[in-house]
Amino acid sequence: MDVINVRGLSFKRFLDIAMPLGTVVHVVTDNDGKDSGDVEGGYSAYAGASNIFIHVGKDKDVPTLEPQLLKANGLSKLNKVFGKSFATGDDMVVWMKANKTTCALALFETGESVAMPEYIADAIA
View 1 (tube, helix red, strand yellow):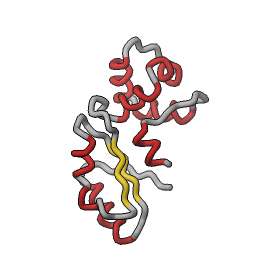
View 2 (tube, helix red, strand yellow):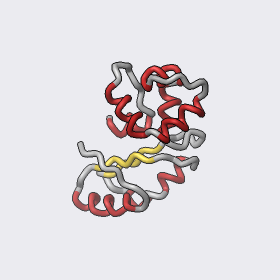
View 3 (cartoon, one colour):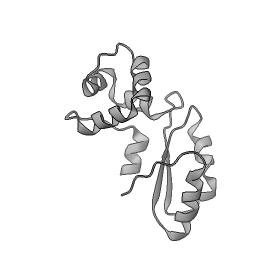
View 4 (cartoon, one colour):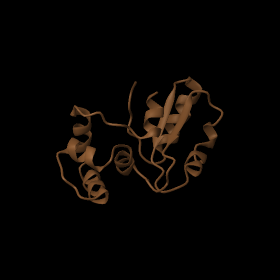
C-alpha cells in the first residue's frame, strides 16, 4: 500500500492514469461540509471503474479529518493521546488543525486504542 497526499484537482489526473492501468485506488477525502453524495458526484467519471473507490465522511456537520477523529474517539480519549486537557472539542479541533504532524505522530505512537473515522476504516479494509 502506498499513501499519496494529493491536493485539489490533481486527484483526477492520478485517477485518469490508474483507471486504464487497473491499479486499485482508494480516494479518501473530506466532505468539507457538503453532502457526501455531492462529493462522490465529483468523481462520477470513475463510477464504472472496478479499481477506483471513493471514501468520504457521510456527516457534513463533521467536515474534515480532525472533527471526524474527535467524533470517532471523544474528547477524553484524544486528550489522553495528545497529552492535553482541552475542555471543549472545538478547542481541540483548532489545536489539531494547527498541529497536524504532532497529532499524526501521537496517533501513530500511542498505546491507546484509537478508532479511525468510518470512511477511513472502509478504505483500509
